[in-house]
Amino acid sequence: MWAVEYLAPEHLGEVLEVLAGADPTETVVWAGGTALAPLLRRGLLEPRRLLGLERVGELAGLSVEDDGSLRIGAVVRLRELYGAELVRGRLPVLAWTARRIGNLRVQNMATVGGHLAHADPAQDLPPVLLALDAEVRLQSRRGTRALPLEEFLLGPMQTARAEDELLTEVRVPPRAFRWRTGYVRYAPRSAEDYPTVGVAASVEVDADGVCREARVAVAGAGPKALRVRAAEQVLVGGPLSADRCREAARRVEGEVDPWDDTRGSAAYKRAMARVWTERLLRQLAAAGS
Amino acid sequence: MSEASVELWVNGERVRAPVWGTEFLAEFLRERLGLVGTKVGCGVGVCGLCTVWMDGKLVSSCLVPAVVAAGRHVWTVEGLVALAEGRVADPPPGLPSGRLVRAVQQALVECEGLQCGICTPGQLWAACALLQEEPNPPEDQVREFLAGNLCRCTGYQGILRAVRAAAREGRCVGG
Image (cartoon, each protein chain N blue to C red):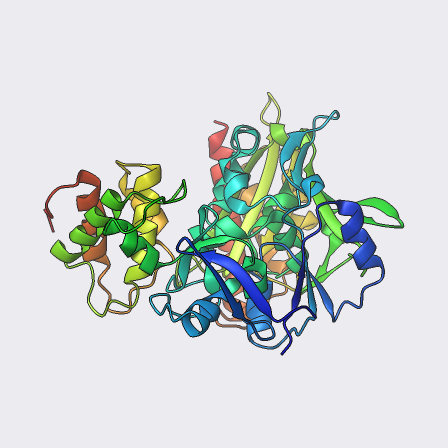
């Protein structure tokens, strides 16, 4: 008889020590388990050892840092994220989104760090965090580095995390707290499903009605959550008119690169990415008038 | 590799049983301990059949490796029924009261909130967790808590009526 081993160290240093010498096919980082458990159950992963993070204090909790940024510890559960006053007050869009992922049990288990490290292109938080200019911190025994989320996400289930690194926290910069940010998710089968497409956008509009900052990001319509700069460029420098919103949405349709799957055909997803981008931008424009 | 057995607390009792490979808590409860009230449905955390209470929170036991549950306090639907029947001497904090469980059970029966029964343990847990947190929940919160508990007999209206009725601790009314 053998059983997979569960390590649950209390300190980050111990986690990094294990990771430094580990064979990634044998040792798997275990946070909430909601994404990895189905892979284990199907035999797609056959680890010998699970490296649990739940007892590591350095990875827990939410805080506002000296530079004003919001720090979200890697093992903050989705339910903790949307329940936190720090999040509801500053970034209601993040709370709104986390509350619509999966179901209550999944929200009790799944962590923010695990969600991002899993890097499924149809997940909900990546586009929202891209629209908030979030960065992730990666730590190993070699040191710590910060990466914009956009550079962390590389492709389907692929990230910039090296084998000995751990995603320790997510940071949202204070400039994002000023932005008007929204997220729309389109899930035609069931509300708990991953979205067919999800669109997040942020805008900052000055007193004259001129859009000064814009972010547009899409999930479910390509190999990773995608920030669409071509759409942002259309929005910045003028009013959020119906024409500009429509043109930005057309740019999204041109940039996304979806594939056919059970959530929709590639052509359908491309069209829906345009439709939902335009709707979201019109909503954000109306919210300021 | 570790020693191939796990010790934890289930329904207030300390248990130790062998585990094999990456065996999950749902299978451990059913096959090692014979607690078959917990079902295995989708195996991916979507359907709610394997809902258990672990250290104060509802989780999908199909997503928890048995070794991860070692040392924890787990309650299954069998324990929930024991609470309802007053057979638990000293329940840990955070569990629903026996009175609440009885109210939900009775409402499920009176409002025809179950048919084949396979989703009932999960619905019972979800309803109890909701009413513990919010004794008089608005409709959208009722739906939020029950979401992710898939009824195979399409009996959602009866289940929703039951939860509303249990919230009032009254009789089943309305359509």
